Length: 66
Image (tube, rainbow, N blue to C red; front, side, top):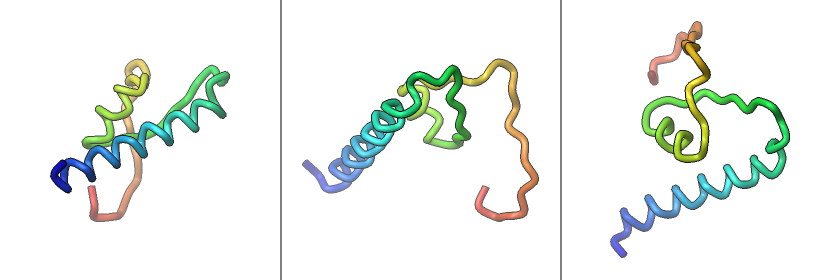
């Protein structure tokens, strides 16, 4: 397996492991909410998250990385 493919697979595996552990703790909660952007959106959709109704993300932010 090419090293770039291995890294992508490893990141996906770690992300899935984190989601599984999170669900062990929060599966009984009536709501689980997070903020995601970019490529992370598809990851969270694959793990059962969806946009919350007609919500719009909003913030006051002075950084330069978005």
